[in-house]
Image 1 (cartoon, rainbow, N blue to C red):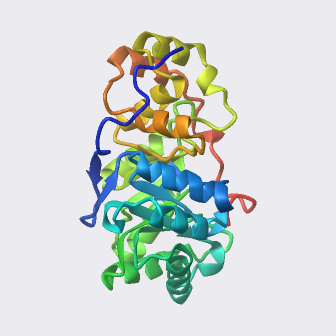
Image 2: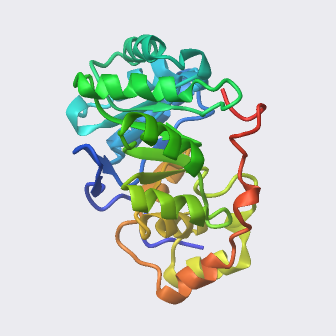
Image 3: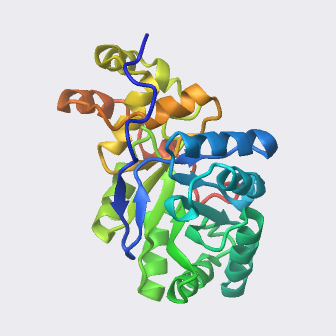
Length: 286
């Protein structure tokens, strides 16, 4: 199947965040890329139009991501860089140290978004982690603060204890894992939903007959259809890719639309909330 477009047609549009910053509507996820492969992919992604690059301490690739950004030839202030910290940093001082270390590894002066990677409720220190992020925001050291893999109950607790709402919650989200309840809570609170594994993880979504039919009709790839599903609902997908053709394909989703019938067909793919990784379980989180 031949797609009509492989190159991005212009700057990636942005969405506003709660604390005043803006975020590109699609970005590059960098797990599990490392070393030279990661650097090369990030550099090419930036050069072909990506302006949101997502990494984390856990990925072990912040240095490579930083090199890719620096050698791409695009001013730092045009790129939205986000990272995340682990459970070992779940304290006010721990978050500050983690932030400084991420800046050092990335080779940047600030992050656009810093996130708590998992709540790890068995440890019961994610409120302290959130307080550390709030302090960084109040000091003007970071542009936006967020969380990842937080359930509505976790969100309510950190908001109740600090009065500060996250800019972003990054969660596992794809058409077959639509996360309707968390997304409803996010909208009510003003939190932007960012989607990891937006094309599905080992789910065969790209080969789903319904998705393929839509792609064939639109002369797009199944991956483009899946990513357009996110963009059309003001979700921010961060697909991982390293192949230049896939990088170009994934970002080329802003010059076509899915119909209401397409969206209804894809809604029927949802397997329900229980299919997501459960962040309350001790084995899920770092």
